[in-house]
Length: 334
Length: 176
Image (cartoon, rainbow over all chains, first blue to last red; front, side, top):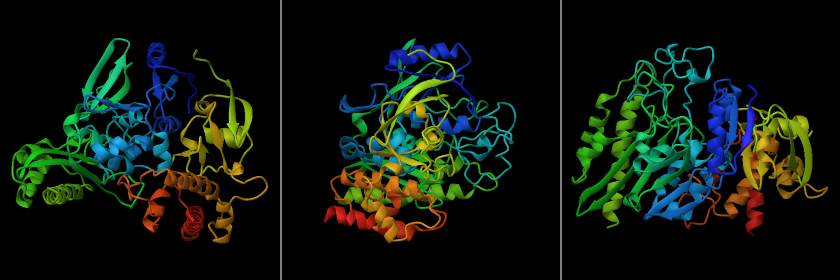
């Protein structure tokens, strides 16, 4: 690991001042739980000249906000998943977090840090290979390499990496909002638009600007109390990244899908909001046939590489199965 | 608040004792425990958060000490495997690991022990897992539940059966 200047911020204002000083001096990074950044620094993939520790910022509470919830950026993943209000109103988020990582990692990882996770693509991690994300313009060895874990949707010729987070898939499905601050002011980004597709700049993973700090995440009243489920498929029963995951939340009124939210993990460079499928389903009477059509339509644009073609069928079946289960339960409970 | 170059003087509280050390900020908590504090019970397995051998307790919660910088833990209460015994006596979990053959080579054991201490405390506080994610339900420490909650600790010798039995015995002793 390269050496760097370390400083610890006490509040958001000092964190922003420290990072802007660091950015004027070669590049700084905010450090929270460290579960990803410390690893990337040890591998030499991230080499910041300065690190600003934000773990002691007073951003570690979950509070009522506009009929929904506001989650501080420093709330640990374990606390978020265990929070009574989250489990009651947004069980999808709790379920998604608990599907990821290990208890030790969830005790360390923060809400803001989880959003900033980088891909686990082997080629990104291996300094002896070509990776446009690590070294822009150098090429992508994953495209013709062992790409079983790679993306099938929204890929580009420059990058087929996937986003590793489970939490972010639930945030995308729940229409969450990411609140950020910088020395220029505050702004909010929809969770669905927070992460980017690779395009021709896969090194540019989020729509955050330099010097911006994530301060909180809002869950809206509109997606509270939906009937929901997170299903994750992976190579072992626990503690593995998703091959495919599906976050779905529905509200059935008078036999019709008044609300339907679907997001997929493990298939794209970002949590993939399945808007094509949602548009085919909203205001319709749920049926297995319609689910089949919607899932197929969502995956029509999928482009497999040599080893990951199975993900298309896996995603299609999982969408259908999760929706079938959710809507039959939802109908029964009415 | 100032950015400081190279080394920092920090005081870490480990197993109830303060240790004043001088470290570069890039040094992991794991390396500080082993190389600066001299407590080599905590083990370096993968050094990338995949195996759990480096698990320690911070303010009672289990974490991977390899994936974090020591300098971030000033003022926190760190407990390693050396701090688990009660005085001169092994704690019941340690005794149960011996009784049930919860290890073979022993390399993962310090991490397994610290992780299990953290896990039993999580269960006591109703912390959910992927197996028990429904609020309000009592947590039944079934095999599935125990495996899920200990999935962050690998044992290459495959002593999982003994580890499971040791943890279960202590859990059942605690709830009786």
